[in-house]
Image (cartoon, rainbow, N blue to C red; front, side, top):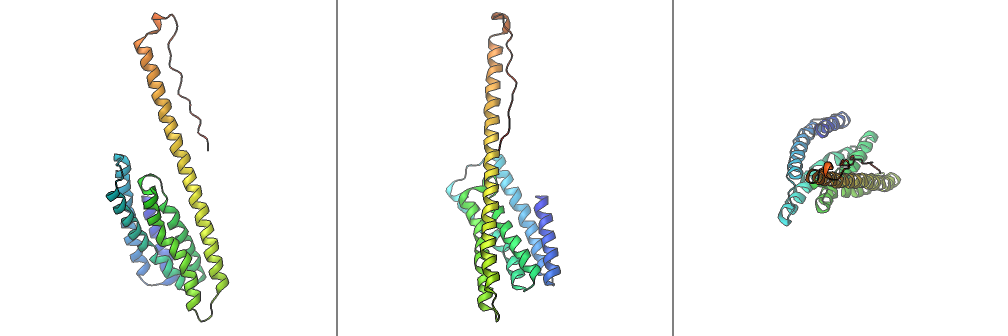
Length: 212
């Protein structure tokens, strides 16, 4: 959570330097509050291991969509500012918004993730062509490169993050299974002491090698 808030403040400051005015600063303040609330909400859901029913899933998806929709306002404004730095910053924000939606835990549930990723993904695909279409001197090359390059980067980074999350989840499940096996071995030693068999009853050490 502190990282998300610090990042929102940093982005707001950079955007304010590019565009001027107080809009970016207001965006940073609101995004900081949204990031804090979002992190606390999903932390409690994951800690309590709440089962996501239909109504709860729909509510979380709506929340993810609305908060992500507000998030996309700044990159759209940066792109339409006409500055090269603003366009580059907008691309980074769009890609980061898509990747962030596919986070671990409850917030990574597919319907919720898709709802959160939809606004930045659609903005990434539609904003550059729209600006080129309504511009007096359209730069279609830039628009096409931005759409294709940004979409490819978003897909690649998102897939990498999902693969890493899946590997971490498999590692935790394997660690839990080994811990239960060790507990069962210790219980067997307690029930039938080593003196009864003439052999030393020692549970094997817990060894786990993380791969991936």
